[in-house]
Length: 300
Image (cartoon, rainbow, N blue to C red):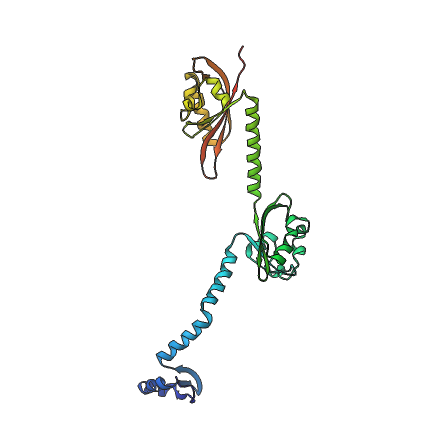
């Protein structure tokens, strides 16, 4: 396309009447089509158009531009809260999750000192690691309590960046609460084992025994392998099996723990009066079975 000469101009009416001629002119240089004396359109060759489109794509659709856009979209889609700070510990950028966690818009957060946005950070362990991230490019990862509100636990990652660093926050309060509950259950089971007279068994949703403790095995006089995968109701007296089956069905239907009186049949045929306390074992999606606590009842 020859840009050294002034483009030819033609009125819209003349252009329509002599299109074939003006098309040939456009192959050599642009042809400006006027409307009521004003420039309205430009006719150029297909090759020139393709070269112009390619140049535009190099500017707006280059790999660097696409990568930068992808990074921005990725950061906005991350569920963790992301706060970028400079070396003066001022906030320079946040994602949407951080705005939600801090209950402020990105515009209100940018430019603010980190200590003003997160006052509790000054008294936390992570505060002493931020200078190490900024000055020595040292990473940090840990769980911290109450950076934002009482009772909340946050998992914090510090990631050094050329601009300064990134603070990644994830609310792990539910996970910490679940861990506390698991610790309490473990302690309760250890207390039962120390007592030595209370039996317990883990059973599947089909009553198959997956594990029984030593006290439970001692009550019926058999080893662990002898009752592994055996239905729990098979260890009970015939007259007690229906009540256990009904209690287990009600447990899986409602989730409410059950407590019934029953009798175990020992290896020598003796009846062992017991109280069965039954609670459901569930994972995040479905029932895994039940936990049966077996407490001997005194006999007259």
